[in-house]
Length: 448
Image (tube, rainbow, N blue to C red; front, side, top):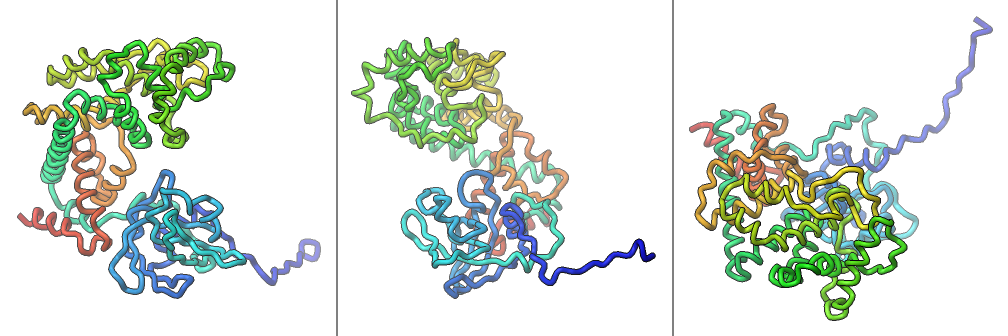
């Protein structure tokens, strides 16, 4: 026993474990710090709703709402940092994405006084939290959003009734898109409107704006008048031909870039004011196959083959559109991700099936609706190829852990219907469901 004996001394001071920033965000969102706070300037801050996780650039939580000194709820974003000055050192004060921030939460205070402000110099309330108050146990299984009150009555509805709710919302959304398209057609004509809308769809969410700007600055009419220069004009206006040094390109790319540059430089001076700034493009979070340069090439081919596209559109047939868009090819871009990348080992589609489905849902179906085409079956049956943050957030708010949730979102129409409900109710509500009328509407459906 003497040989095995050991003396163990306990440290007088044990430093508390400080969670990393991701864990802090998760525990904040889970409500472990509470809902009532006092800001660094003494204001009473109540969290009305914690919002939804932001998986992209910008503040940590969107669609949140806070109440300051008992006033009406203020909607906006919430940012959480370990150090208060991270707001400044991370560039949030000059970033447009943080303009809608209504609360800055931090853990550690810097030595000198610091005020959180936005690019427009609006002061953002600050709240300091103390991780030492947190319980040791923590579950990392935090949902993207918190289920809303409507999940209870929706769970009680038979599947066909829920489907009818989503169908009605989807048809309403489709009519709204058709009306917006009609107004644009009245201003710009059918062809230019279609070209601009498809360009925006090719840009995905991250690059919808720059693609729309390119299609507005280089009209379909102009590109069709210069079919041999369409690639060069599109890449030039997009700002992708600002480095004429061919040495930066790989051997397989130099000939193509030289051809682009030779066609672009005689027009560059007169088009200088139309060239998009580099920072308008969002490249970092884009999959290589979806790189904007590949999509610009697809847009160029579409402009050249516009009569064939219009013929397929006139058939009012989903298969015809799928076949046309899926068959778009380019001798260079079939095997290249970007101008600087090495060629791929196999050919790749310029417009993939999931993007074709998005173009059908957001451009083609609304266009056909304006032509009084019966879309009942095609729209309702179009399968959803992808989901996104907004769809998943809306599904969490409406359905929570309902095992039928996946089945309700198998079609594009039902995803569109879900988005319509989410935008009309969840995003318009700053009361954390307390004053939202949708749950009561669902309860009436359940009772009827």
